[in-house]
Image 1 (cartoon, helix red, strand yellow):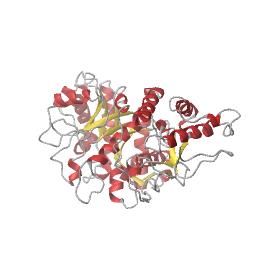
Image 2 (cartoon, one colour):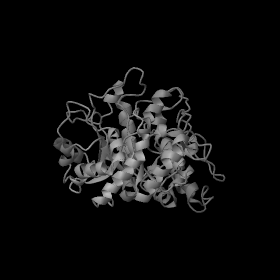
Image 3 (cartoon, one colour):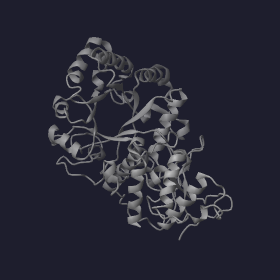
Image 4 (cartoon, one colour):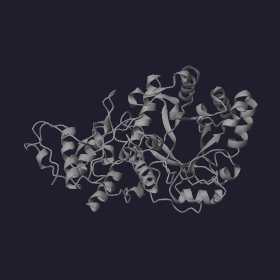
Length: 470
């Protein structure tokens, strides 16, 4: 079975082009006293195939080390400078000249994050945000950098008034007219994107009694149907991001793209931080990377090629707060991996989520907050086609399942018992389910790079019967 699984992944990675996929970056925080030099960090990034990095300042040693590396960089203008940048255009000119123009293009700065999660800043800097963004944009124009560098500002999911179900996503009403509409106008006019920080871990940790761990970690689960739009969700990340897309749509800004500037899972936490473990962190980040690099959009936006920045590159020992805050790193300060996951398309061909044995008893839970799911045993589950990915991707996956995948596709040949209805959805569902059942419903065998998903009720197409085992 393992050989079949690896073969499936290899073929699908070749079938779905890199052009159809998203991009993975990493947040390089430095709140620690034991980190390697910036020069060593750049070598580490390149050795891992990471070609995007986001930093939380404009430290000269870091920006110089990145010079000539071809790594795309997002820099940050900290919250404490918002009032100065908003109040004086000359300050914005000076800041951009010193911290951006002095390094670009040798250091490939592609974006400036103006502030970070400003709406929850205890210093109440929200009123300075949009003026600061506009003044930074004017400075980029002054130095002829506006065509290559975008301006945005990361928001936390707490900026949403509603996030469940995803279709009901909406921004906090007190921010709509004063901040969001003018900011989204700015992003639209400048061709920029909305930066979003999304952490399914927080939702799971706070509601572990009702949120399935499999749902939070991108593992197989029956999924949940959004009552508002009829779409089925299989992970909390998609549900959270689609809540943002729905909020944008509600304000008529469907054309504004989204970049996930922070997401991650801690490898260690305090006793009350449920779910913080090396195993879960590896599963979350590894499965997320696989989803993004193989072209997985979201149920609401299946063609959205998301750029996602993992948080964070290192464990940072001087961060305050709960233990988890110091244990989001992909690497220890000595540059050893905290857990082994791939960061590139090539590495995915050998990656497999090291899931622990599943207990024989049923596990029932209903996630809330951004999509829910009822978790149960996989003994009576089926694999069905996901029509949201489009006909072309379904056909590619169907061709694989019936060919290299060795699914039993005889019943869907002309004149056979399951040929009717003669539709791509019906034929793909039969083939995908055959592959899934032949491989004993193992994790990863009902995915086909987003072209299929698991359900707990048998599919029905005409008189065709869908077996549950071979």
